Length: 149
Image (tube, rainbow, N blue to C red; front, side, top):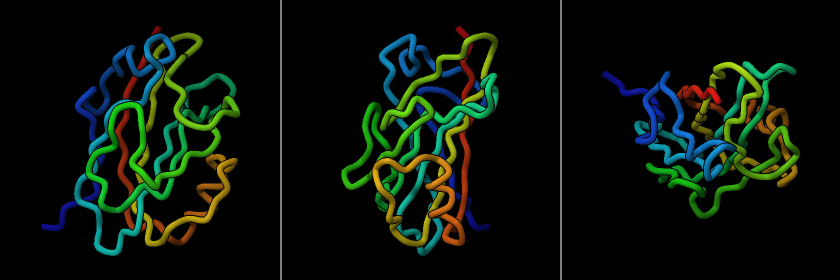
């Protein structure tokens, strides 16, 4: 059996609450993420973290790309050397933790195995990243966390 690309976190299980430490109510740092089973030909990874439950449409919390293919762990609060980050929905570069205005929201940590490095400016957003990945995604994995204030 061929194993599929996977993304997990020691901070929370799939479908479970994200600890406050990783939200705007806490330290507002990214949780540790673990990558397993990348497909052959993976040159790098890309990551999109978004909230489809935001009142004004999907809210982007983090976009990153060119995460080295050798990466098995994205440490808490930082990306591996060589990785690049783009703009989130706040217009800032980097991670912005969950901060739902009301109710319980879902946060999708979407990992993509890419067959070549991506040429994007640091001002790139989710849409630019998705466009650059077109035709180059070898596999996709997702981890979902929830948060309620």
